[in-house]
Image (cartoon, rainbow, N blue to C red):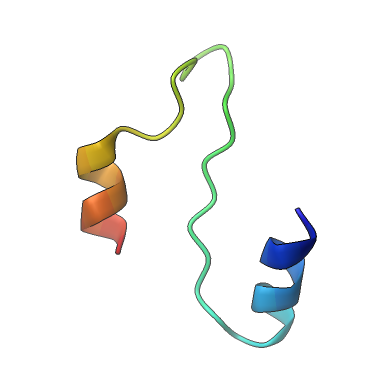
Length: 36
């Protein structure tokens, strides 16, 4: 998304976890909390 690209350009950390066939529900809540 454009927001992620902007953040990367400004050296702002980004957590990116797009849905895929291997992770149909996206990033699990516990993994998101750990990343933050």
